[in-house]
Image (cartoon, rainbow, N blue to C red; front, side, top):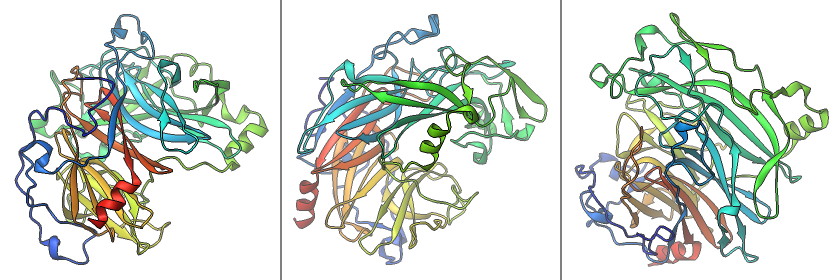
Length: 476
């Protein structure tokens, strides 16, 4: 495989595909359904490309192809190119630059010392393309908070030493850049999905719902399948970009809110000590001591919109489904031509079928999600075309097949193509194996839609889809 280009038609070996039955749903004829997918006659989840025709005219490439790491020998990643776990990607636009962000670890998902990387591209003057440069445009914006090592299969230690970071890049209209970083740790497994919270738990959970002792993974026979995220703390730092596109600190790092405790209580009977943090987190200054001018600029400055939207839910309703299978998790959102807002979700308790909900008020809350008849798993992504039509990209549960589907009215998706067929034989790690494009995020700039994704949680890939191509397909 050419690791710099993923063949313009998005074709690679399909490998083993998820074999699921064809999907039928009585919502296909329900005009009040959040969305309806007209399943193509040739659709077959057991075939390469899902049996669908390939969308021609989109281009695909590998943006980041890592080197294997042995960081557990030193506690530090060897370079910005090392680490075969790469995931959780997103976009930010900054002036004439486009920045892709993602998590990076030597091998494992949410592994100790997982950091945040960024790669900057320069937009062409007419915004028709992006020059991503070479390694000189790579940056580490969220350094490791604990020494890097492999993630353990057991969480029976008395010390928490596996903190990982999740960072975001905020762009203010006055041109300032800030990196906001959350520190989290995975410790234990739960038998109830309510304790599987991406933002991280801040309070102990009942002893009977926590399991730490396992040999090769969670005790699924007893229902312990949900890894538990714990929130540790939040940090803020102003950064700047040089001419090459590298992002560097531009001042002191601040801890927002209370600094991390020296120990964490996980259940009423389990308390663990917290290994001291790496620099610069250890020497972070309380945010209240930051210059007044900086605090004022950060709190009142208007943000430049980044990629994607976050659907709004009332507290405690984020996972709720109309049918009681309350495992809604990943999400995307679009606006229909009639002004209605739609959230599309996957469901960890009902896989390879999307759920959706509709609301009329942008600032209102979504109701519980409703099961649709649209095939798909994990995190989809959607957006609007200039004509008002809606496009959506999803994938199968094995994440080897990605498809794109269109709806003129944002309801009836009646045109569908294969977008990518990939099965990278990736380096194995915890929550990581072979697969293809997954966890899509998008940003539309000028004449193109840019979609970023991880490939088997190892490489970072990017696809360019001309807006005009999709508008033409709607007319055919």
